[in-house]
Amino acid sequence: MATMAEKQKEIEELLCALETDTHNGGQKQEDFLTQLLSYTRSTCIDDTYLAPLFSKRGMGVLGRYAFGENQRQPAPENRTTALKCLNNVLDPPDKAELLPIAIILVSCLAKTKKLPTLTDSEWDDLVHFVNTNMYSSPLTLTSPATTTLKLLSTLAVRYESQAYRFLPSLHTILQFLDNIPSVSGWPLEPAASLLINCLASIPFNHHTSAEFPEWPGVVNRLTDIVRSAIPILKKSHGDEKEVLPLLMVLLRIAQSQQQPPARARLSEKVLPSSSDRVQPLGQGSSLPHLLLNLSSTSAEPQVREIILALFFELSDKSPNKFVENIGFGNAAGFISSKGLQLSPDQLRAGAGRENVDPITGQRRDMQPRREEIEMTEEDKEREAERLFVLFERLRATGVVNVQNPVAQFHDSGRFEELPEDDAELD
Image 1: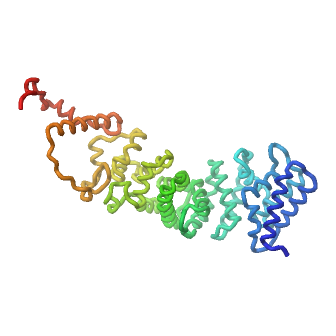
Image 2: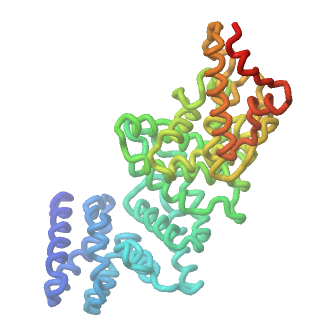
Image 3: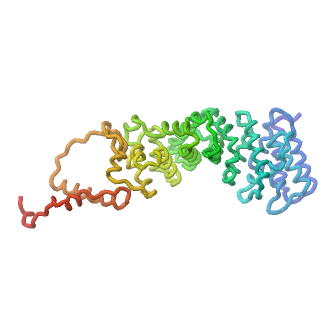
């Protein structure tokens, strides 16, 4: 009897033969596909030898024989056999739902392929198949469960208007996320990233969405992941786009009115606390500091935008609260880009806490003390010129409606120019 390793090797050889003999047709192709079909019909509990068929390559090979490529239609007998293989790979042989599986797999063959236009009835069949598979999955990411998750996220992304249909799978996805073990090293390992991609593609803030008790635990897990991922990306100069799906999920939780426990837990994790304000915001190692630092240093505009939008949503979209929560220095760019304005009174109100620096968000009692330095008249003049220029630049941005204090003092009539002869006076 062949070992598991021998079976897996033979499957890989059959896939290779089918790849190199795509256009020749004939008995060989039918024989190769029939042999693969026999493997997929196995009732063996340990089916890890089928791993090559779950890969992108395996799905692609079977898909080409099932659906054709470059407008070349496969032979009818080969098409039927390939479809049976796909059915058995995704679902046990006693659940023959070939049409829904075939429709799902078309979306996974290549970016250039599109699903045909589906009727409501066909969407119902397709979604029922996916949601049923998710509901019946044990809370372990087996190959069939992983494949179903990939197909779910693909469909939800490509057909956004139909994504709400997969809301019944949300409960299982949340359970998966709440139960996946923590890993050392890179936290966005495939199991976590796959689940996050699914969560990012399902509109869980849809009006038909229900509350789930797993949400607070899931928020803990998601914030732990982003808390661990940012320093690794910074240290290794990795691709910051890898955290975009995760940041998008956090933003959608902040925007959701249907998940108040999740939003409340997210506020606890993301908004700076009093202990975070020991340092200027963005310079520490807690999650609020790391997010604010990334929002100002990331080379990816989407990363910067989503992080600041997250803080803005958790500030109830109030510019005053926004400034109070993260400091005017961190908030200014976002406020400007959104066309919002703050008057001096609003800026002071936005500071909120009397003992907090409104620009940096740091507690005043933790700021380094500066020794008083006696300034000469020349030093004072230079400082006045510098302040005048700074206020003019700030006013020009339109972010804050501020009258230049030097100009204001001049217009008040209390500013009097000395006659030229007085310039010579001591």
